[in-house]
Structures are given as C-alpha cells and as structure tokens.
Length: 112
Image (cartoon, helix red, strand yellow):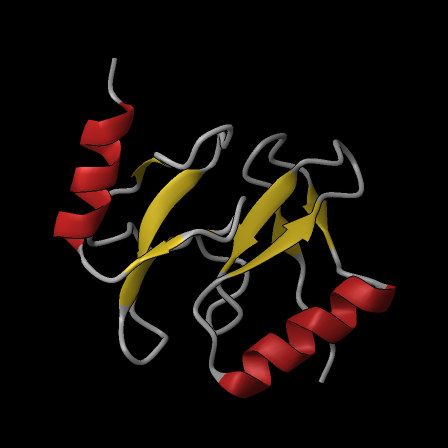
C-alpha cells in the first residue's frame, strides 16, 4: 500500500513518510494504532498522525493532557487507553500513574 500524503501540525506542509518513518507508519496502521509521531522533513518538528485516517486531522483527545509532574520533565501526561490496565503516562520521561488521582497527587506534591 502506498503511504499517504500527511500534513505537518506545525508548518502545515505536506509530506510522504520515507525510510524508517514509512516503516513505522505502516506498522502502526497494521496494529490499528490511533496515534504515532512522525518528524516533518520540512520544519523538523514532530507531528501527530492517526495511521487509521491519514491526511485528516487527528480527533480531539477525550481527556486533556496536563503538564507532567515528574521532576525535571517538561512533557505532558495523558490518558493511555491502549494499554491494559489503562493508565496515565508521560511519553517524554516515561513516568506512569495508575489513575487520575495518583497523577493529581503527584502534581500537588510538585506545586510550589
């Protein structure tokens, strides 16, 4: 199957994934994943892609992400419903929380 033309979230340029990114996109589509990050070859920013519906904007997340409370991390924590058991996690630092209450407690500990 030919890889589709994608649009960068940052610069709005279109691109077709190549090499390792094309392989990642194909594998993600085959697994039914809803989200994969690819690098835009124009502006070099990461862009979110839904492999099931490439070329269309990703659907809004049902649960908003929030700043990661892990010390020294500038990523965002979000709900991960593709794992069992479901959890909250930060892809930037790899920290996970078993539920929203644990995430909120960690955020409260970090608050000044």
